[in-house]
Image (tube, rainbow, N blue to C red; front, side, top):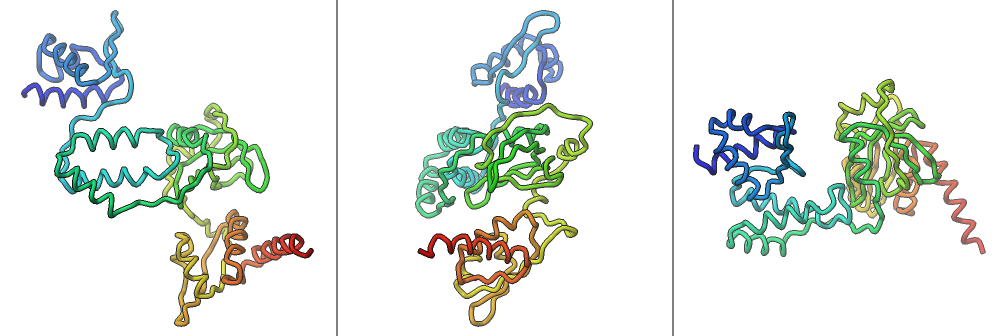
Length: 317
């Protein structure tokens, strides 16, 4: 094995463990202790941040983030990865700070000149547009950390009311430029979706082994919870739409698949929704004006009528 191959293998080895000794790595790579010392010095020169601790219980460890070995990409793979990274650029805030900019800069820097020109040209033809929001998300990373290393957090959540809650985050997802956190809420004693920009305060709480919901979130996946409906606790939504109402609802991901369109362009929505989405649905369908007529559920229809009466007071004089 030549030196380049050994260094690649060495990067993978040091990434796999928290601490290691020179002799352990030398034995694993089948080289002398002196050669291993030279190879570790070579890693340091390449920018791998190694930290040594002397003494009987000492050794080496990677000081900061782990470093990936060199990876070979085809031209199409490199283009796809670069554009995938670019698709995140329009988000004002991400849970991993500026790592996207740093990764794209490194990736682009080492591309061949011809591929750089191809990507530059392609960026003039393809845009991954995300609606711009100026909402602050100071607790985006805190919620992600609580989902990755499961532990409860205490939040102040401000929607229609300002409430203190203890939640157990399962994961995050983004839709239409907004970030959402799926979590188990101790106050509601059920799963809920929280808009991340509405989390005003967040305090990490210690893991409570005696709380069953805390253990539950460790093995849960965010994907099944996106717009998930419990069949025992749903409301039947029925909305009649004009042709313009159909067009506007088709831009809403969670409604578009439920629209039945007729020959004259009008349409009908029939689907199940969670009771927790009623407040959102009131404002959404009111925003469609006369283009949508909510027929069911009766509770949602009543909430829309109440909101209309409140609005009417503003315009009576």
